[in-house]
Image (cartoon, rainbow, N blue to C red; front, side, top):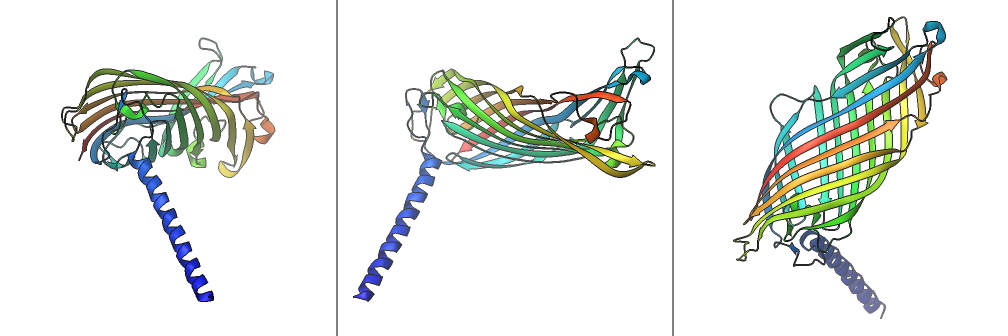
Length: 376
């Protein structure tokens, strides 16, 4: 009896595990191949299939900061600004993309003159009809521009000078973006950005978005010694929420006449505007200390910055021609940070004749991408 009970229990467990595996893989398959409930009068969904694409991108990212200050009365009481910027030249890449259903994987290589002394980047995204998640990471090592301005142009005490450093600094950025589409039955947000959805008639939708971003600019002691930086390194953590509107304008559409999408013709333009509010904006600054021209340590300050309005925008053109798909996409991001009040100079390695120190900065990037895909 005990043996029969053990055998029955083992069979029950095996069947339960097998059922869970079937359910899990069924859900994975549904996610990859099925879009959920859609209004087929507005959205056409080609059958899931393998695809191979060729893409080319142009991208440019950077960081700019102005550190505003005032000299004490014994040194003229003049206002000034110490500014610097780290950016890359235009980064040009070509690559391949393979996919099945909603899943895509791509890899690109930089071509032509390098955009920076060193650069690496990683991106991953999943965009469905009702929601999407994007992960982006890049780091750039490059020479940076530094400038110092004191007083107003035309004044007797006016001073301005700028240099490009001989040493490199590093810019890092990591961001997670999420979005939700309300009118997901009639509006296919991915239609102009990737293969898999075709917008039959013009439609739009309100959207919600959220972003988490970490960004930093690191200068080595050697890189800042001959520059005009009052603050040498920045590291910011931001949480932003917002919403906006996205619309697909269908300029041309003809339904397919065969099982392999023979006769499919479509031309769609997407415009998306997503203003956001950075509700949490944390900043850590570092200023190096020197003794007899040698780096002897550093001082770190941690502060909260003002909430700031920021912006995410994109535009795209998607064209379906039978089993071929072409997309041209442009995205733009601009995220600010600014100190609330004058900073506590006791926490920083700042000359004692400097007063009322404050700053504002911005991370910015834009990308232009062309994609040509064939669906098998």
